[in-house]
Length: 378
Ligand code: PMP
Ligand code: GLN
Image (cartoon, rainbow, N blue to C red):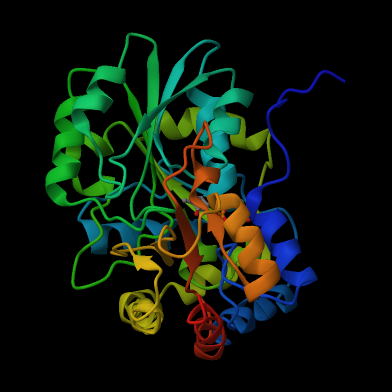
């Protein structure tokens, strides 16, 4: 076989989780909660199964879930999307992003990603026949550099993928930055894929600035969400995409011949659970407490904390602790200290090194304390 993705191996998340299991390390590598979701959610799914919701749902998702998503976006961001023509339920954010790219990218098109970026974006662009153009976020702060983004836009630029709150950098774009993006794209036909999977994990009183809030962005955007992140059920793989009707029509053409539909009982359970906004409105405080516990625990160590304004990640600079490369450090930390982390170089195209690694703090307090006890030895 001639590989479609010759440069791709096993994802860093899989590699580090396997290494963590092998060495019985505390796994703060791969991003997923180690605590249970709200019991009401699997109860609602179970009731849906028992009530017989076990056959194919409508291709774009069950109407009740699409309506609940549209209502939520309107309540939080003040824009009304049509549940019929502008919201689609997907098999998680990963499938949503790939599907959006397959729907819009023609061979040779360029798609801008902002490095460091989530590891699926570039292979997805490759599979769609496009060419990824990597534009760095400012090293250290991970903030967007609009002069550099502007310089990367060419007549071949089909799309740009943004991600706020950001994995791995834990930055949150301000309203001013969103407006700068809106202004930059205004004279172009560039499509925005706005990966907002950490939309409910924003700290210190800041607000998530969804692309839905900005008319000039919403008109050109696929806005991607993930119930896995929001409701602590990453294994369920259910997400949603909001996009203008014309975009959604093209998206659904690909979606129907990709997964066709997303599993029915989970959609019913989620539609019911979404009627109460409390679970997602509590998330900032819930995750901020975990972030603060983790940061306070590391404050006396030689790991230098970078800011964490959103997402469930905390980056640290390792230079005062080790001479090793990020990748070697993460291997060593897992094997010898018993804590797994992810090297930031995994999110850059060229393995760029800045001696920074990422921890996930979406963990029980006991897990975080066990990790801190080990990390304080550094
Ligand atoms: N985008 C980002 C930035 C992510 O961190 C993740 C999950 N790690 C995804 C997309 C994928 O989300 P899902 O599990 O819903 O496919
Ligand atoms: N999004 C998660 C992370 O960044 C991992 C998801 C995966 O394993 N692909 O850690």
